[in-house]
Length: 200
Figure 1 (spheres, rainbow, N blue to C red):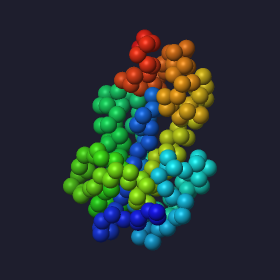
Figure 2: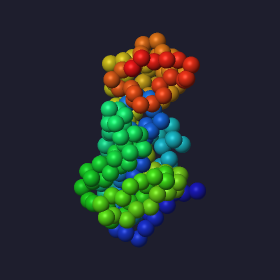
Figure 3: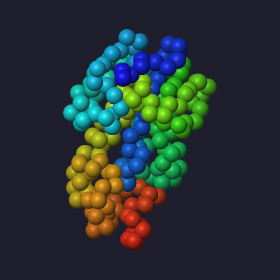
């Protein structure tokens, strides 16, 4: 099934999505993308369905062929303060803020969003596998976040963020148990299963 170009009849429809909601460390990252009407790409899909190689291939295509795009990180201290859902929506809002053209319609992956200014919007469950602009936003959010996690991996290599990107893998949890937490860990998350106590 090929992805649709747009949901609404507005000129500047923006797709937005986030990456990293379920991670134990690092930011939640959102992207907003406005694509031209005639944009086509056979590979583009929900970033979770794509290999890292394909995402890296798509990133410069989206950046050069989009009408405009923006990416925003919200970091762990703010996630801990306002909670992950609010942080995800804030990251989407702030990425839309940074677009060089303000959208006149917004389509959002998932079922949670808060009004952005007075711009009409629609939340679409699995939107990243239905609409090209949301898929493009999912690819940018994922690739920018992965780059950030690879960068901070060098600071704390024992957590292997280069590989797990901060997600709760067994190895990541074992490293938290052994080495404790870093400034990049989300203290409001259950970093270890119930049977372990963690001193924060």
